[in-house]
Amino acid sequence: MSNPAPPPDSFAFCADLVRSHDFPRYAATLFAPAAERRALLAIYAFNVEIVRVRDQVSQPLPGEIRLQWWTDMLSGHVHGSAEGSPVAAELLRAIRDFDLPVEPLSLLAEEHQFDLYNDPMPTMAALEDYLAATSSALFALAAQVLGPPSEAAEHVARHAGLAQGIVQVIANLPRDAAHRQLFVPQQVLEKHDCSMEDVFAGKETPNLHAVLEQLAGEARQHMTAASSLLAQLAPPLRPAFLPLRQAQADLERLSRPGRNPFGLQPTSRLRTLWTLWRASRSREFTK
Image 1: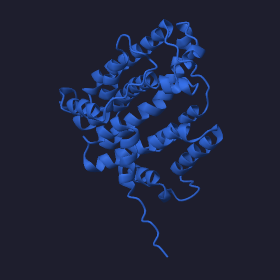
Image 2: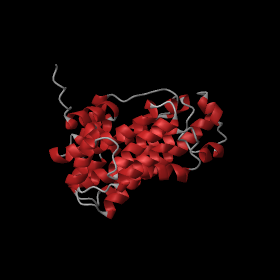
Image 3: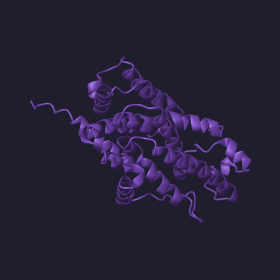
Image 4: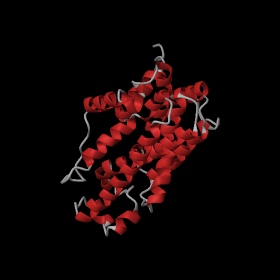
């Protein structure tokens, strides 16, 4: 009789998961101290698990059940052992070691229920609420790992998350349109007389370019606000916001004149590492 396979190294599992599915956040953790890096990877691995639910189910109900498992786990009501999930085990460890609040993690899982349906994002305010509970929450939790919670850090996190999230909406347009799902607010499409069906059909129109220019402008405003507030934070907290620099580089690339909004343009991992290394050594992140 063969011996049972040893349990996976939960830390290595989380690191591999984030490196494979969210390389910019993985790369940002390389600039954090070892203990804090482990907690950051646990948070980001949890986010990867939540975001991937959409791609792992063909109907909303199984997705709802998967997300509910995570909210149950976080509230202490687990169906099945949390230790059976390397990500859950690491996340519980991070919560314990760094006294992290559970509510934002539960809200993040709940907010991603939206991903399971093809309902349109109605307004810019609705998109901002969604991004505040997802992207901004990740920045805020990362900051709490690196230092004591503060209103200043929460303020930077909100703007950083909105900026990064809007950039992802622009970048993910080809994939979302192929699934007949749009995170671009209906309100913005209607303002520029842009047809949702044209977007689903992959039609590049002046109207769509106007929509994306408006979104890019919103992202730039939040980036400017986050960057100006970053100087108010203690230097040990600032590496939590390194992924914002990758979002800034992505926005510049996505805003180039003549770019096809339906063309996939992934960034190389080497370029991401270079972008974050340069940012980590800049005055903004060290002084």
